Length: 332
Image 1 (cartoon, rainbow, N blue to C red):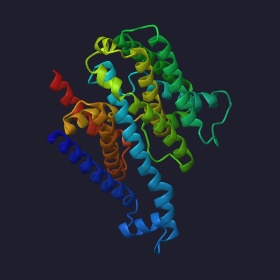
Image 2 (cartoon, rainbow, N blue to C red; image 1 turned 90 degrees about the vertical axis):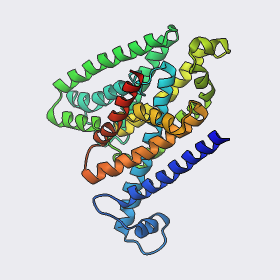
Image 3 (tube, rainbow, N blue to C red; image 1 turned 180 degrees about the vertical axis):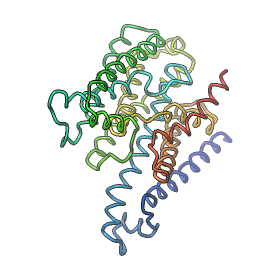
Image 4 (tube, rainbow, N blue to C red; image 1 turned 90 degrees about the horizontal axis):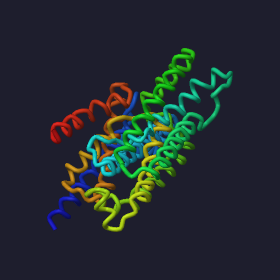
């Protein structure tokens, strides 16, 4: 009873914090908007200038919702990878998902001009190529995982694929022109402000599908806490569960990377924060808990990034690195 009460309290506190930060995120920016005008803009009631309404609805609201989706999705995907690999330093990009997305974007931004093609005017061009690159890496890793039972071998192969893809991206960077190179570097810094309402529906649908798979994988994740051999003795199909987790991670982390760029440390650090807050290893609590913690932290990072005009990656790194250091020292 005490554990249930503690869990409910933590969820309530996090929910209130998320709502407060969401409200602050809507009110702050290059020009502050009062809470009253923000409410009028969202509800259509009262006398609110049309310019202010457009800023709130088409820019700040989209950005705040993107922060919630990105933070929650990266946190859940990181939790899944840490449980699957039984490694506290595993993140959502250990399978080469980020590298695959980077290759797709590099081909689109850096490679197209070399062939005399223009990438301008394509609504989902960068995001689509990033997601395609992530999906191709997943298919490659999945085909290998179907033949190899050792999860650590798969982890090492994912790192090798990431290194090989990184080399290809460096070649494209070396051969590209200055304008294309600048556009690619800006994408690698990560951004929550490039998503439009049309893209939001695609991003939301893909991450919802990933979360449905994550919820369906809660029981397998709890069984995998004690190792794959134990899970097999309990009748779990490890390969099927592994494939489900790979697909969920790609939909969550791959989609966020496609639309927002590679955002670091959220997927690595937030699952540890969630475990500490809830003092629980049950994934029935950790999956929604990690999503809520990730969304709350990302909203806070977005507020800080707007106040100091920092790239979002710089803020998430400054907040995430101390958590990673704490995990390393704790596990010696």
